[in-house]
Image 1: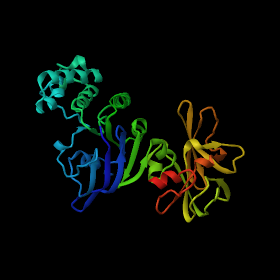
Image 2 (image 1 turned 135 degrees about the vertical axis):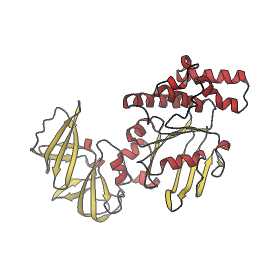
Image 3 (image 1 turned 90 degrees about the vertical axis):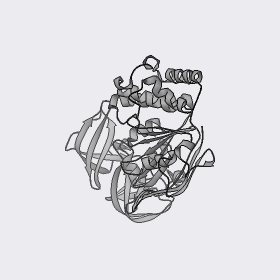
Image 4 (image 1 turned 45 degrees about the horizontal axis):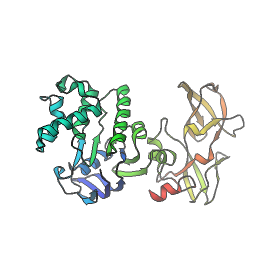
Length: 365
């Protein structure tokens, strides 16, 4: 398999810019997620790596070789599409063997390779079945098998589970990750589902409006978001944003919201003006001693936990607390926040301020 390096790639379609200068590295053997909303540029980025689109500018390296202007046939990359893209007139065996037959591989080797891949994917019993009669999950296994059978340097996957129902999608996500771990394959996977990205990825690139907002491990992008977009897009419920106007100095460990002093990680960067206090729902506690107060609007029971929506002087927020905790609609309660987990943002730019929480992430972003 191989390392993939993206250096300042840009893609324009006439007057429209689909991807602005983007740079990141996909290490050999990583399961790498391109995450973002529809139209953000993630699929265009994937297609440029695969050679289905040529970049307007920038460079793409595969295993140290510059490939940005090479056709797909010369890149040794396999592509798995969302809608399977199988040959309907062929059975499963012929779909799997087609890439090898087209390369002129001897028949005995083709047969052995197809059976090997079928065993890996658990589809041995359907090799002679027509693909049209298979379930969505089985067709996706065949599509994966047709990519795997070539032993390419890297796999590109464009929302391959998007056509499956929610329950089977989760099961297939687990299978796909397990398959990746067995093969130790370099895989680039496009999705708009942040839960899928967090569950499966070693690294995540979060894109928005043709720009890379953040690049890091799932834990980094969740715990230490670089922008308000990332903080809002990752997490369910997403991070709460409490806007306030004031100043924070370098070295500060608290800010004042609505006359109440609230803790923050020690700041490595000062700022003033319109700022935002960002806190995840699970980092909020209902407390009789909390000076900052909110009124309970709704409660949502989720089994072991519940989501409580509150109205506060700085806007609405959601808290994830133990389901045994009693909260009555209309009740005014005290709130406390886990200071080490707080992120401050500049409201105008949406960028996170540098603190002891995120300084290493932002320095390498």
